[in-house]
Length: 225
Image 1: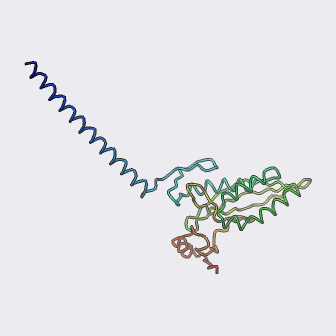
Image 2: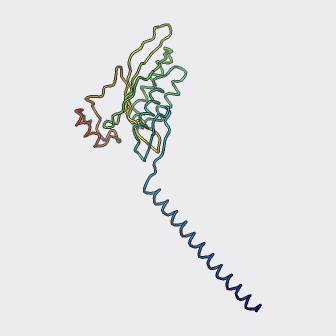
């Protein structure tokens, strides 16, 4: 009987070992399958990410690849307007660095000399500028954010000069970060009608759908040679 009992014990041990081995193989197979599915989804379906703008977050923002929703663009445009609109001798170099680092290469090249000239004027005349935002508007067809408010310029010993001022931005996305691909500023309230839009090849993020939307709204689309 002792021999038979030992044989039964050995048989049960072998069965348990085979069962355990099968469970391990199945677990590894399921784990490998899960990893493959995750890798496939990561490779072919870029996940959405939440990006926090420099401005206070009041709406849900979303970024997916090179696409971002209106809240992302408005939030960062507000932050850039507050940065550019509030300058003095003490912070002008910081403002320059932040603006140029956020600008696309074409925009950076376009504004580099102008910014250096403005820095020289601010340093020489000890000018201070303050900008208070009144409102913001985003046009999805033109992909432009307008921010306007009161701009106050102060010179030593002079009465502050106050006028309504508008900043225009087109905010692109690169690796989840905002990029300024278009920038303009001028006195008065936003000019949102009869826009002259550069050709698509000069602004990569301006799609044909946007251009058609401009034409349908009565805007003039000017082709730049």
